[in-house]
Figure 1: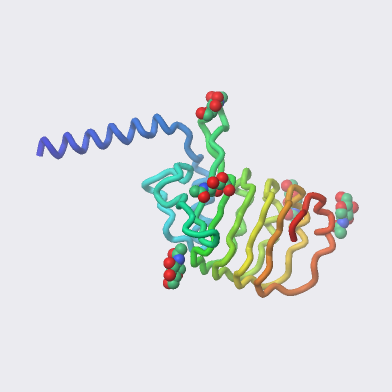
Figure 2 (figure 1 turned 180 degrees about the horizontal axis):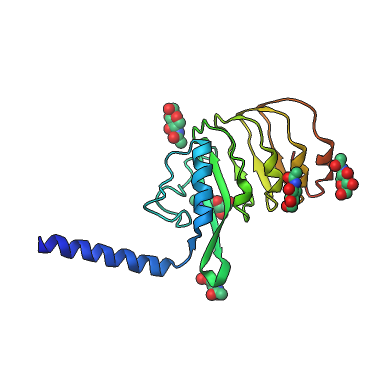
Length: 186
Ligand SMILES: *[C@@H]1O[C@H](CO)[C@@H](O)[C@H](O)[C@H]1NC(C)=O
Ligand SMILES: *[C@@H]1O[C@H](CO)[C@@H](O)[C@H](O)[C@H]1NC(C)=O
Ligand SMILES: *[C@@H]1O[C@H](CO)[C@@H](O)[C@H](O)[C@H]1NC(C)=O
Ligand SMILES: *[C@@H]1O[C@H](CO)[C@@H](O)[C@H](O)[C@H]1NC(C)=O
Ligand SMILES: *[C@@H]1O[C@H](CO)[C@@H](O)[C@H](O)[C@H]1NC(C)=O
């Protein structure tokens, strides 16, 4: 009994020290945003209870098995003198995701890249993505997306790459996309 308590206490102390050493964590509102995004996408193996999404362990980043299979949530933890993290990359390629695209990307205000290539995602590209203003790269290649490409994406003035091929999209290319002066890949 005493032994068990000692073990338990050491684990507790060790995990407190680890947290002190790690320092920076993701703020609650971005954790909630990520939880909601995971539910919408059908990403069921994100573990919120055990590990901070910015820790780089516990299933938040895997070493890529191949160029096509990528499971990687990356943060920038240099904010507030290295005390605060913000999510910058969500790369979930070939993860068997069968949900839909989340509308609330703008609740991750520092998100630069979202890559959901080679999944089974369906539904439309949300108009709301037009307000995720720091996005530099969007890749949705190889899904089951339908509907038109929203003209609101022309709002993303930092966008350099927009990859939408191999879906079931329809309609015309919005003229406004021609205003994306940094776009290199479409
Ligand atoms: C995860 O993605 C980030 C951003 O693209 C990259 O810098 C990092 O090397 C990737 N990590 C792994 C393990 O692939
Ligand atoms: C933040 O951490 C980096 C890497 O450890 C370090 O080079 C930098 O000086 C730190 N910045 C501050 C403001 O503490
Ligand atoms: C996706 O599903 C296939 C078929 O069930 C399986 O072989 C593969 O490992 C799954 N991929 C991931 C990343 O879970
Ligand atoms: C365009 O971006 C601005 C500023 O980020 C935002 O307020 C607005 O809602 C966006 N418009 C659309 C159509 O997404
Ligand atoms: C492109 O941007 C200019 C300047 O902001 C604006 O006047 C014009 O309506 C835009 N074109 C399209 C097709 O949205």
